[in-house]
Image 1 (tube, one colour):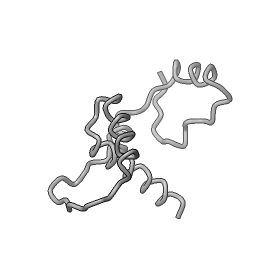
Image 2: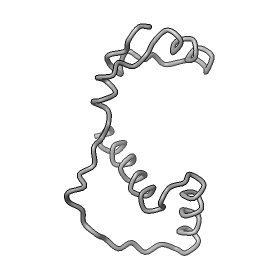
Image 3: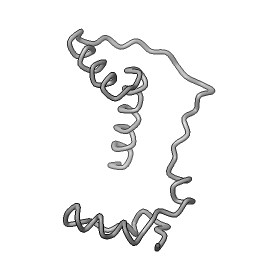
Image 4: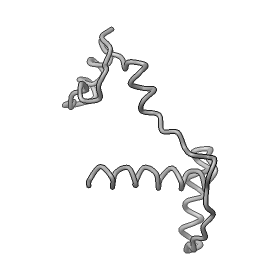
Length: 90
């Protein structure tokens, strides 16, 4: 197995079959994986209030239940992912 030590070493794949072939011969280096884990700062948090349309909140809760997640945790995850996307664009 050839270790991948940089995210940029992973090519764009034409299809799933090409990706499967690549991953049969390669693996992510454990140090790369360790640096990609985002640790949340649980020491400090601020409580906020958001108002949602009841139907929207119901849909969010339904999605969270289907993923066996707490809906608030799932929403925080969504916000964190979107924040990362926005920061990358800048």
